[in-house]
Length: 190
Image 1 (cartoon, rainbow, N blue to C red):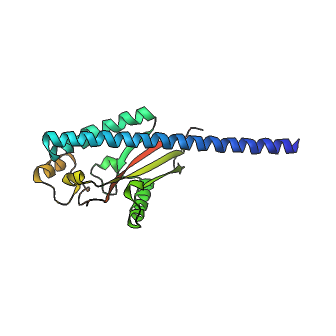
Image 2 (cartoon, rainbow, N blue to C red):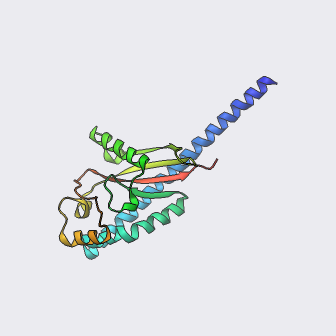
């Protein structure tokens, strides 16, 4: 009887582990899809705004459209997706301790020669009352980003930034640097 109980306990432990792996894989699949959708939607909205009204108009996209895109995609995939950076423009996007640590590790990995497109990280985080799956993917600074996030920002663009983001820190980036990251989380319901 004792060996039966031990075998049952081992079997159940294995099943719980397998469920956690499935849960993690499902989260990572959803997170990757959500990141891709947000990146694609945001980039097309930014490019359309730049074509219509130049870089100053793109600031409005980040201010008004990006949060609603993130909310729609979050709802669609049953998770929370956002963007953050070590140098944020919008204080609402300030990195938490976990995100700051991951962003710093991304900087180290990039300095070590890893391609910026490969900079992703995910893990189970148990810092709050409910454990979460969390994932981040680095956002590279592309040429189009420099109009609003580079070292030389045109006066009309800077004026628009100052209006929407008086405490802006998200400038001075160079091509190929880490502009920030997509950050995704989902509570683990056990």
